[in-house]
Length: 267
Image (tube, rainbow, N blue to C red; front, side, top):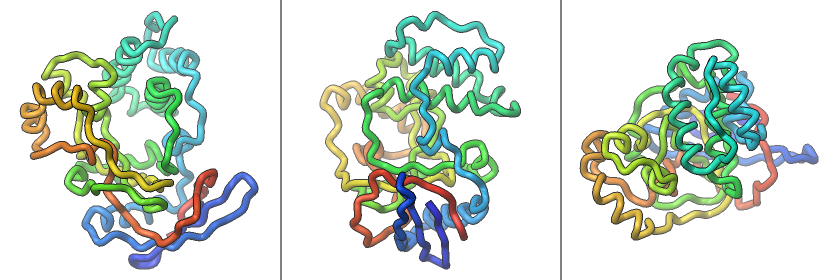
């Protein structure tokens, strides 16, 4: 995918496996968040995208990736004969505990491959409805704390560009589904609203209206919600914060973009 930006308008060029191209004209959303995003994109125009963050690299072989991670991190592997949810939760905690140390090491791509592999194995049959574009660790200098949570839209439209959630942790519903501990401190620590801005983006491939939260989750969340909201300095957490995202740019293109991939950005 090639992107060119001119003031508030820019063009994205996608290519498919047959190397067929499609040009899409976009208009930047009129918001401070979208303006911030467009300002960071110009710094990444000559930088190759990250295949792990962009969902191009296969990270399904968790057993092999975990072994590589332990070798890199100088850790003794735990028993992983069965990657059930309890084991996946434990692996995620290992990732959290060693992230800060290993993120400062050179050639540390296995750290992020390990993280994505965990989540890939949590939802092995998940069919993505977005085209992901990210630069991984190269986004680091452009990453900052920013209230993205307040910019979430009530629905997501086909082919529009959105800012993906980018926290080191899990959304509240995922925390609940993954059978993480029923513990307020751990919930506040691991489950996070969208307060980290990273200059990545997704192109939504189909219209999406957030579904209502499952009543069982609503009942469970009620126990922890007030303290969690206070801990993170937010006033609400609705279904849109799980199923939707902040909009960055709009297009009139209605053509299906399934099967197309990203190449680079030109500002």
